[in-house]
Length: 212
Image (cartoon, rainbow, N blue to C red; front, side, top):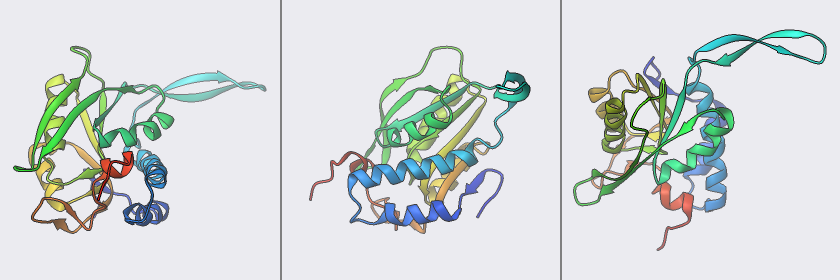
């Protein structure tokens, strides 16, 4: 399922690494490495329409025409799990700004609760990439996108590794202009609002805080 505002990245390398990412036997160290690889591959799709300006560089032989990004880019990870996607995006967009939103899910209501926000009061970026490994109910993503809309960001994108149909529908219902880039559209949410088949709690697996 791919459209202008929903990009399902089914590249063979993405799918190869995604299978290992899902495996419950994958260690936290390998989970972080796989997340880095998948996020880098997703970044190539998320940035396809970034605007460029002409410039000239001097090679060891002669002057050469070149291109540079002409827009300001913000990376906005949803804490804490979104932090796992920041470094790979910064590697390919080293000039990006990084701002943070802290959200957690109230397990009783499955609703997002904001506990931290670090955004500049003025001067929004031209494009903001919201980063989160998983799009489940869409509650956290929608809250983050609403914060960015209030900040005045003219264009937003959501970069996730796994998405549920319910989460995609929720985001596009409230933010129909926001592009979603994902490595997988999974089956559904279970009665606990977890993605099926999913990969468990991405934050716990990234940061080795999963205890039996």
